[in-house]
Image 1 (cartoon, helix red, strand yellow):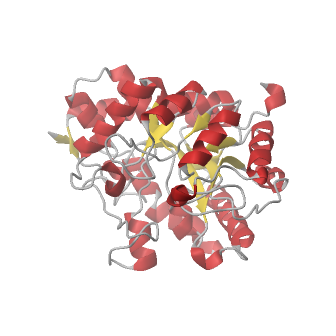
Image 2 (cartoon, helix red, strand yellow):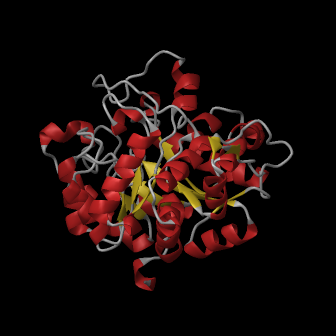
Length: 367
């Protein structure tokens, strides 16, 4: 086994990849790696505006580069402290933080509004940022606000987190059987018209089915795993995996241990979810949505165990996959199982890259 050297800038030298084989290291390095869920804006926004760019460069950029990340989706998640009254203000703060980070690090990252922007960022060797909403508390029932948020760079939207918003119910509300509200139905049309991709991760089961019934464009699940392997309300049944694939969408597999298995918290078990999703939906509809949260949780809550959904689900982590630098371990395990290199490249990011290049930010009228 050899240690794969991360390609870091001089100031980004404290993050290294785990021990992996030379073959896995080489494959990972030449692949496009897409992470469709990293909450780093939660911590970045807590810094002074003048310090946010440097904080990202010193804390997060080394990790992204060590993990080989080429495209990073940045969700805007609103903590309970800001809901509901402060949701719009905090959403604006977090979106502006993303823009500040990009402005302060033009040699390293770039916010992308279209597929052409993503292509250009990849060609120029900088990480493509895509801004997303995780829960739409900022919108309330004022669906026209999606137009304003689109102007600010939002290109992906999940209508809920665990709980209820004015657009629909989150997965922790599954017992209600609630579908999208009238505002949620309207929001589907508005987002599709603008070119904002719809994300069903965190939507309740009935809401997910309802959205998939209405969708006329590809739908994604940015960070969800397979219900068949771990029957948790955050995960997707086989029927929903197939339905997302039928829209032309992609499912990003979540690596948080609580969503992977009740007891077996290993990289191999994560890859079991990838294999299952690929078997059900097809390899061209599976990617990575890691949901790395350990660093965020420990800064915000301290090292004590944290309940994730208010219902006693305690956050746990897969050893080695606590942060972006561990992503090559997934490549190693897929290669060990005999996966074709082309299929591994699809899972690492080819699927989401192709979808983003084709559909990101494209208004319906231009498709």
